[in-house]
Image (cartoon, rainbow, N blue to C red):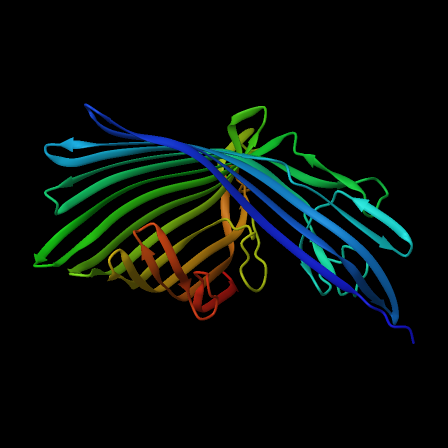
Length: 442
């Protein structure tokens, strides 16, 4: 019998470079810090090997080589101002960020039964078992998924912050953030009569847009100072609004479809700080609650009024089984609660050499409710009504723990291990994760 060998090598990387310059200026009206920065991000995924297909006891070898790459450039402008207001510190910050993305590039080359194929169809999710059958075989030890659609996103972000401190015991501030992203959507089209050859075509009628807005107010109050011990509380409120649109290129002011979220967050963090001769210890508690209301609507034709009606809920139906991030639903809400604690300490070992350590422990609870159904015009006419047909309830219970320790010299040189947990060293992932779902007709 002849030996049949196969192999596969997958590699990927993301490389980020930052270039910036700025300066600090002292003027008669206060101190001003300005900074300009440019960031480039390059990502690439490479796959190469010889796959082995088993079709009814017959082996086929499939040499292949694929590549997918993408680039993004970010431009940032920062301006900070600081001064005294009524003999107390006051300041504000303006941060403007612009993102420019390039269309991804790549190819897939392979040979199947002495025929060579070369296609610009992008790939992702390479594995050593059959999944999407991109080579045309049902049983093969090398496979991937085709990227049949993608969006090229450009956008900008404006971040405004202002803060004021009174008497060293009371600090308050406000922050406003606005994000606007606009994307061209691309879809894969096969050449007529071809199994593999084709091209990506941009949607000429619609483009996607995503906006995020939030305003946050916070206060930090110190209630107790006894010797070297300080104790107080950090409190903040936030309101946010996120929307994703499908817009007509001929009439951008008239969205065809909107995915909307409204979010309310309240958080309070009691804390204490203790300083001693060779360092300090910080400790804080987290208590956070959030409510997010979700609603997905579109503009639909209503024959009974001979016109278009806005704000019509999507007609949707669920998948059976686990929830997926790409599943469409009509409306719903998300209830979130988190609590935990964090401690951090720094101890001077010798002159400017310090040992630092920290530990964070969090419990997070989420309850997500999604409603599915059909929007319809009643037989008697009038506006659209919604018939709820299914309801999904997801519950998440997570335990997060992370820690770090290391040495710092002159607060400039750091050496150590940061953000470690026993499951995923180097990453801030849940050490215990449970996910429950319920699915039933309403």
